[in-house]
Length: 472
Image (cartoon, rainbow, N blue to C red; front, side, top):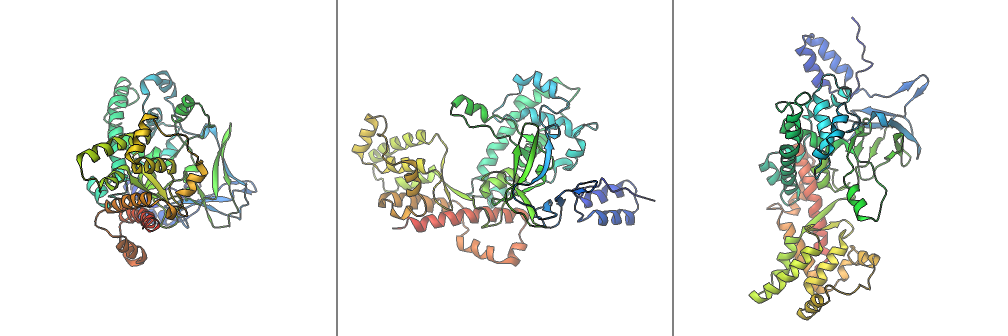
């Protein structure tokens, strides 16, 4: 008996294949041999005498699979090319004509509904052109975003990180989008979709799939506000092969978008056996966990950040208020601040300093001004143009500039950072540090506990550094 494994890509999960073989009546020894044969076998392309310089592998990668260099790769080399016809999006699905025809009924704040309807159809159709691609994610069960954790687990493991609140918003938006837009559309087209198959549960899994694996084509920057609003609604697309690459902040490859194709290009010299990494953008660990379901090990993520919620800034600024009249005056200032910050809700700090330096500058000036200065501010409907340019403000709120701030400004930042640290709960920074250094204890953590630790320890370290830089 002969078997042809030429199409058995290594991204097939061998354990899952073994179960399916045994369910189909294949002898247990043969199923075990097949599983062993397919385990840890890299896949690459060969065309006559030409071989690809990269391979997909489950060995030597930071995740379950990734891409490795088979040979040394020079900067600027094209690692692979994906033709536009191989991209899965709302215009390349079998239901594209219908989605285009009823486009006006599918508008949503996310802009993802057409793609998600396409995925609902293609992932459940036995005759789908995209079945070989979508079968790589059987049932989408491997996705482990925090939205799939229990609320209790999110609240316990991720308290203070901002993720539980973001997930609550996500789940609310997903349910509303499905109930108000998707389900009525499905009900109007029973020949293509079935509410018993295309459920809210599957829709939520596909949202996570799009969050984790899709790409958005970058748009040219435009100063026109209407164009900027349109730019935000560029729909995502699924890009086979490119979604096999893992992410790190210090990546060595980048996806280029061209009129006829997309190309993965090396950004620097990559050694043989080294993993090839793409970038998903400048993402903090809390964003990576929220949107993609993974984190970079501390301290590897150079883009890590910690937020100081505006509520903590309010608490810090009102601690010395003793009368109702003082509080009334302060609340008026705070309302102005909330309008100026456009309800973003947080000041963002990186390992190098404040990333929302303009908002922080405005907040400190507004909250620390005297009653006479605030009265003048209201009369003038704002303050006069600042003498300080953007570069100077950036320097002022960098780690190098923070120690030299006015005492009142430092005190307010310091207290807001202390209150933010308190919001993480009972866990002290030192106990987290000891856990991070204890390899045996780290191995005893579940994958969710480990990822949560990377997030809140990184955030606490940034806030702790901020406390040191602003202490009196």
